[in-house]
Length: 107
Length: 122
Image (tube, rainbow over all chains, first blue to last red):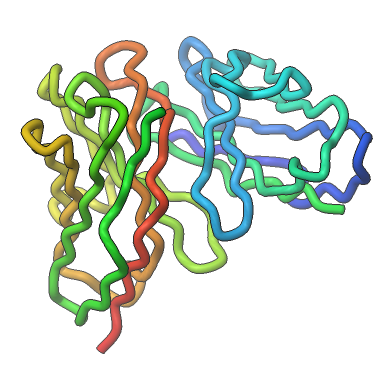
């Protein structure tokens, strides 16, 4: 099973700042089958990024993903108040699909 | 706009089973993957398993093998997840998701249901 590690656990920032979230895999993820999800309190997760760098429908361009192999990054260029949430990376290249433990972005 | 609407909260006894439903509107299920994820209180996300009806494929997380069944009913555009031999550690919010298939057996979770709280308690 591919284990995903996310860092930092918590990121304390202010609106307008840049957020950089890291996701590292225990083995290479084939063809960048990596996704990022956002979850706000009391809500279901929602898809942000798939294929490591493709934004999902309706996702603003301040969200960007990059990486390949075992190292991936989600960047939020300028934080908006609605971006404060927990972010999970997930690999779907190898069964069982696995999630990282999440990074909380808070004020 | 695709919406997935799940059935309501459940309280179950240890050793029993639970069946959660997930009905799609604004889109079909049968040409996509159907997958389930759970989240224990205050914890992260855990993948349970998924099926892709048009490819007749299914895969499950190892800790759920033999204890979970995921099915879909084309006539009602509804998916189901049944988990048996429940224990207190299964207390969690269970989410369904419709997956966009990249290639058979590989899909990302594009649309999510609102979640169903399953509480296992004696």
